Length: 203
Image (cartoon, rainbow, N blue to C red; front, side, top):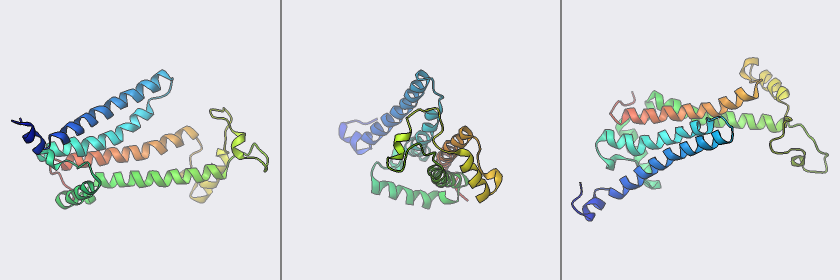
């Protein structure tokens, strides 16, 4: 408890106020995304995916300071302060050698790689609906039932490039995997920070 406004300011009151309201706000936003998906007859995967950055934010802004015993140990809200937080975190907890953090790195970089590979395969196998003299974009309509690209050709190419079973022949399974990989990785990173908050450090 602060005896005065000056003491509250000195002890980091605005930081706690901003961070706790931010966490509350993004948690409510998860609910908003789920409700919107439900009302539009969609599946809830967008709100599930958004839990990954929310878990990461909660780990560095809430769980870590509580585990370390002070909100002064939480991640600062500036760029240089964030970089300093990362360097101090590595020095104190050896986060780079924590298996959960390594899974998070594989999730983020792997997700980038898979998205780039998927995008290049899609753009290389578009089904052209227009002549050479007009934009290819004119041949497609948002929400159309017909496929915009030849998934069989893309699957065949990638299956021969790597090996047969490295490629997806089901569009729904492919896109679920593209979303799932980085989300699970970021969940693991949030868990790594949350365990190191209580000094269960990297090896």
